[in-house]
Length: 139
Length: 236
Image (cartoon, rainbow over all chains, first blue to last red; front, side, top):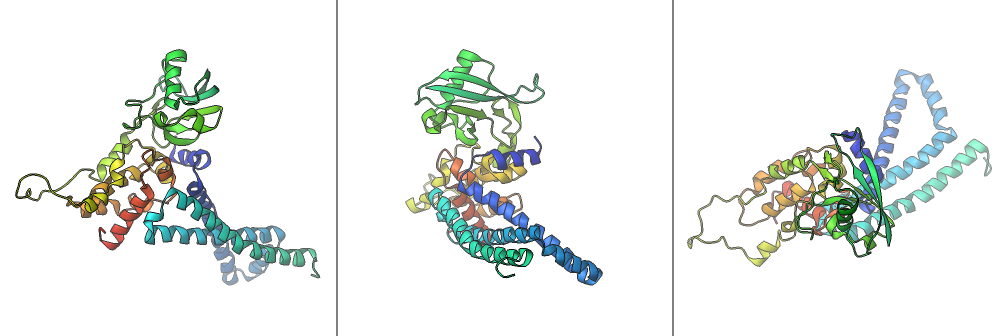
């Protein structure tokens, strides 16, 4: 098996626990953030290279699909950040806490904190999306 | 109880690609998965290839993926899997030689790369006998002495799946065992070996290694302690 096939087989089929799920979610959210940053750097460069195109890009950003994408992006940022702090804390300051019980619990706590941060943000973004794109809530 | 046992089969001399053979058998809930594989060899198909030696969780030769997760086949009871279907596959990330047997070469190559033996060329103590150590000094590396080199940890690691040059959890555990041994004098050399991209820094703390270890070694802790020793230059 090629490395790529082995890796993807492991990602998808290995029945790990919370640590494995955290690793996968960290990867996916990291890729989400990198994808957004790449797009964002390109579109911002249009201000200099193609100002008219920049206006078009901003209109694309205002579309519903991009609005939903930005709501997902905010989750990516929160989870990647909170889980990154969890890993840094355990690895740098509390190696002895890398126990099965504490790792399982700390992953769920990191997910919980991410959701607590994300849900109000997502609600606010959704509210604005519905208001501006669909004229709801007095928009 | 009746069990459906699905076993990964691959004979490179005959098969173009792997397939699964299914065996229906009546087993005792207290049977181990290794017992089931022995039943297959005895009653169904004697060509099934697998490694086993002590069959009591000491030698570490029968590590394999059971229902998608690494275990020693001799340490898993059927009743603990909580399933009527049991799927047995070889360890992931190592080349399959035949059926459940994988090429352990890259694993042992990584193990050897961290100098997993006591290095001390200082003269012997005056009495010419042993180099003494306090209970606290011994306790410092007690946990990592338990490794049986079954490879359950290394082959559950996403970083190893992506690149078999990554030394892997087992090699780091065995390096830890000597790095923190007060009698050893080559800690700095081992830390230098592990302070590279395919050393400890490839660890992504996915924690599968610790979950898979049949000896309950705190592997991620050991890796973090080695990282800390590299960062601080201290072995406390």
